[in-house]
Length: 343
Ligand code: SAM
Image (cartoon, rainbow, N blue to C red):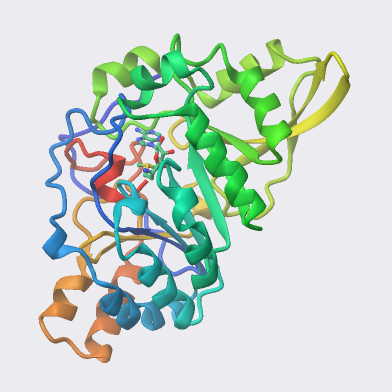
């Protein structure tokens, strides 16, 4: 099933309003050295320019405002956040402001060399994105320069550095859906938690997404077909976690083991009611929903000389106005890429 993008109805989206706590996604840039087939093609969003990126000093100014309003978790993403030369300084700015749960989403290619500095700066968790285990496939799926070996090495290095590690895989029909079992085994071997992700209908790469879409339901069914047991649903660790948890029995030559995996099916099984996401774009726009167009210009206000009270008021407006702009809600929007908004 592929959900339509509704583009001719008024923007009246369900109100979500204030949350008692928030998980913040901080996009650090739109650029990425890879080119996943479902991500950027067809996006009409203008990528952020380097001059517009919030600096570590500007992050240091905004972090206390966001933390005092209930931000508990901060995840740096993009684009590819490790392409920012000042990534360690940005992480340190948030840690100095008191953020404790600091995480990074990355393709892993440039991670190992900066791991010691990132850990010293306060990073606690990493999610590495890898859509196939086959070197012969990876360039087709994720673009030239992608490497299975380097992504897995990055996961192991992060694990050995004491970080919590997750592995994100976007499932694509006829492309990598024959690898679900092999990926579960590889994740268990490496001691990392795999999360299968349903392609989200952002409007970009629309033809590819339509052709290769696999619903979360079909992912679980596929895992069951490739395993020794029917997957069993577990309770989410936190109600606001995007990933539903499943457990399945995997058997190999040496025996059997139960493997837990996550499933993020944002479009077919939306979790808007429990959603506590806030998003800060590279240039400092605040959004309450990935699908929300625009957002409030916190970064521009900061650069325009606004004091903390004025910045706080803008932020409060963003929090009060948090709404679901999910594809199931009728909204006016244009195709965008996760890399531009911060996936
Ligand atoms: N460069 C980093 C990476 O590769 O993880 C961070 C940015 S990337 C946009 C974050 C995540 O978004 C990746 O796991 C990617 O696969 C996922 N993503 C991008 N477009 C998507 C889409 N249309 N649906 C679902 N996931 C998507």
